[in-house]
Length: 358
Ligand SMILES: *[C@@H]1O[C@H](CO)[C@@H](O)[C@H](O)[C@H]1NC(C)=O
Ligand SMILES: *[C@@H]1O[C@H](CO)[C@@H](O)[C@H](O)[C@H]1NC(C)=O
Image 1 (cartoon, helix red, strand yellow):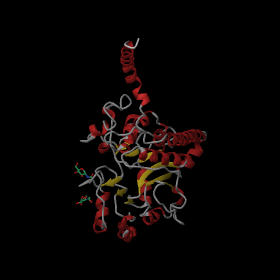
Image 2 (tube, rainbow, N blue to C red):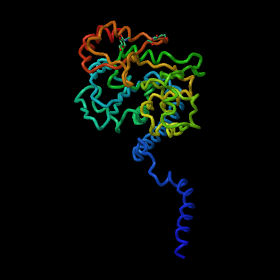
Image 3 (spheres, rainbow, N blue to C red):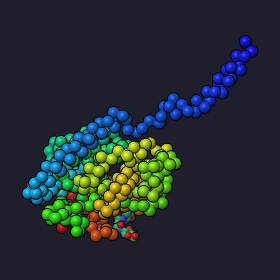
Image 4 (cartoon, helix red, strand yellow):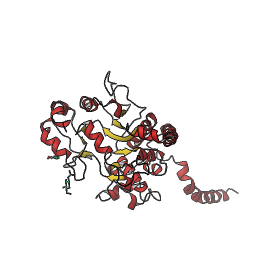
């Protein structure tokens, strides 16, 4: 009897080996998702509310033709500020918005882990939305952008375009110029039979040729993105975009791609989820509804550690503004980044004479 014990033991061990392999993924704690479950549920509930509200809004607007005509005349642009520091260029933006009260709304997502002062007066006062922590090389920047889109969709049915900008962005033209640029570019031949509803396109960069694309695709592990996103479907583009209402809604409704893009990266060097999620999703769902380029100018010459060139006060001149506006597309650039905080003074000095002068 004693002699058989080691045999039984080792036999039992042998038997349990395959079981161990089977159960290991369940027993070992999974790699934590960068987005916690409570945060995920909060977002889902917000996105759901915004989706339902938009459904009712579109039903009520299409029920009466006159209503459509009247409301389309007052289309607004939602400016979505995504920031983790004070908005140092707010005096310049104040000037930009001045006198256009009924044509825009402002929403600010400010990382709660940084100190942020609610300005006592002005257009940024009380425009903060319920925000959560954001971090580079994680999907938290996607979540923050989606939170901004959902809040703006829910807040005002007149919000027709949604422009995402950061605290390092500045305007390159007047509000008037901006407004007319985005609204004067509907796709031709898509007027409906009443001639009132135009189909506008989103200004979002969508690129499929970039040397680091393969590494970025595999940042979460080999084949992890399959079957939802094949490498052929994977795209890259600027983090900053201007989306139509239809596309803003499409983005907050998405669950399928989000399940993949929210996974943590194994390779953090190639981890820029926010530069992939939006271009990939829109290029899969509605490529013709997008211009495929951004209206936010950025200078990647001599970029360091994934950061673009940051302009310093010595570089600020009217010629720089004129140069930054020039694009290779038919549209002029409307915003530019990045600028160091001390550029505010030289920029303000030429706000009226250069930047906002059309
Ligand atoms: C882009 O940045 C480089 C320095 O990194 C600078 O020499 C160049 O003038 C900048 N280009 C523009 C258009 O500002
Ligand atoms: C325009 O295209 C040329 C050639 O591809 C490129 O060198 C240049 O940087 C582009 N300019 C802008 C403003 O994107």
